Amino acid sequence: MNMLVLGSVAILVAVALFAYFLLEPELADLRSEQMKAETAATEATRGTAQTPIYDLIDRVLRTLGIRPFEEEELELAGITSSVTSVVATTLLIAFVAFGGTLALTGSFFFAVIVMLVAPLSVKMYVGLKTSRRRAKFNQQMAETMTLLSSALKSGMNVPNALGSVAAEMDAPMGEEIARIVNETRLGRDLIDGMKDTAARMESDDFLWVTEAVAIQRESGGRLSEILDRVTDTISQRNELRQKVESLAAEGKASAVILMGLPVGVGVLFLVINPDYMAPLFTTGAGKICMIISLVFYVLGGLWLRSITKVKL
Image (cartoon, rainbow, N blue to C red; front, side, top):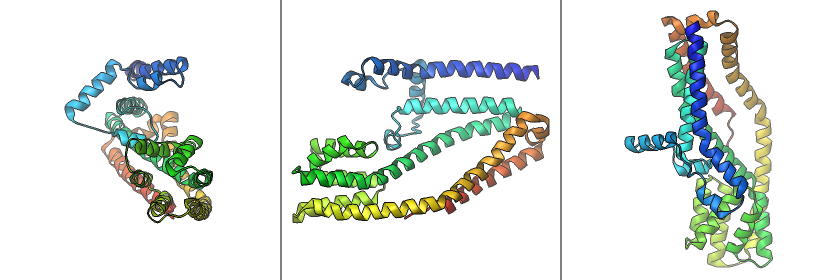
């Protein structure tokens, strides 16, 4: 027992040191932003601070040719950290999960399993952030089209109207439209940029707007009137989507409770009465039962997700 306590203390000290060196660049960026807020120098130097851990991770990734995350993937999720920073955070989470599981269960086998699950959890988190960002993008469509139509009625052309909308809208809509405007200024075709945005954000509504702009470019006409009709359709779709989501909210809440209850009860028993749970981690039959339970737990989670996810 004393060895377990000493090992737990050593792990916590190591985690603290690792976290300090890991977070040092972020603290440097924070100080820089406080002193030079909204300046070009700050934007140019963001994410450039390095530590020995960051340099080591970069070298290992380049040597192995592994790319756990892509810049586009993180950008789509709205994560401004660099790939190296996300990988370092993933390693920290895996290390803490390994130490915590080892301290609670005393089983090296399950500690390794939990450590390997940590990267998958980060990947799922990035996917969840992406889904939420896309959902918010679609929710902002009606307001965006109203602003765009108003800008066109005031006499602006389409690129200038998009620039005005980008300045008014919050993320992610403002960021995506600003990206289209910047690409257009660099010489890219406006329609191509809008189509790429519609595909990247998986937005049928934005694709309709893109097609409306393309038709107006070829045949002429008042684009503002077309956008007004499209805005009405988008508003009705959003209203229907919100009704469906409110009806499905109870099922989603039940799924969260069902998924969290076994984990919560298991951790509670590990803390209150570790000897009661010890056979699950120290005997062969217990390990087999745990593995089978984990497999069915994952399958159950995927099944609950499929029946509570509604597509319109």
